[in-house]
Length: 340
Ligand SMILES: [Zn+2]
Ligand SMILES: [Zn+2]
Ligand SMILES: [Zn+2]
Ligand SMILES: [Zn+2]
Ligand SMILES: [Zn+2]
Image (tube, rainbow, N blue to C red; front, side):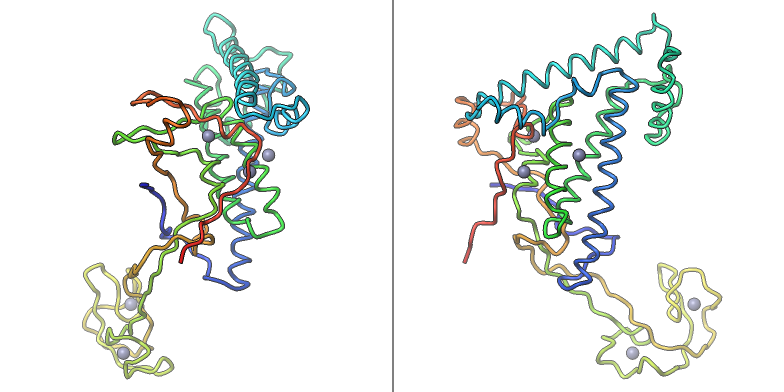
């Protein structure tokens, strides 16, 4: 099985491997991601109803379809799938018709006067999505909605990855389902085909595999004065030394570490030694259920020919495959298999 994923993010502060600081950072990052996802999802739903006129009562949701599946007693996957495809494609067709009706050049492009509130809402949405404010300049409202919904889903999954061990995990889990169903139902979720291989890229499904990659890495802290390991070199951190200023190839000053500084090459100044982080050295990557970087997860997993033939009854050989798993009720989490 081939997989592809993120091992560790760079350029952002990563939480420590354990302890209360880790919990606090994860909580904060998780809440930020969840808020962002909810805001985008809310904008999408408001725009669908207020700008494009699809009543929210006609827009299915993961909660409503899950309840309906239970009420009707649809226990087999195929019965659920038929029901879900029917419900969502109806909504998608209606929304496409509504958007076409309001953007068709033969119709007035300004929203009707009775729709002033909707228009104001649209302007607010346009501002926050960086869209042109004038509907006549809108090239493709469908793609704008789709982009907002897909970003909302990506952030919902981030939020769950940060919050899975917190009291918000249930909320984040349900929210991810909610957004994934909207994205899959209206805009579609596809199995990726590249390099003669089908790849599972469904964010919701990948989110339910609770394993990620942990990177074992070290960084040595070197002394700014002599370049050796600061823990073993003769310089003391609380003592000033006379240093001859020089700037390295990148322009960083050996005295203060900054790129633009008042020091000139060759002058002697009295300075404390500073720890300088050397390059990160990656030692190993391992599969764990709680990766050091909570977002270090798989982004795609190879779907073997056997799995596809088993599921589809035939070899798809390059044809498009749609994913409907993200519309279904939750079927639980996959845990990391026990390995010795
Ligand atoms: Zn939600
Ligand atoms: Zn999917
Ligand atoms: Zn030193
Ligand atoms: Zn300097
Ligand atoms: Zn779930």
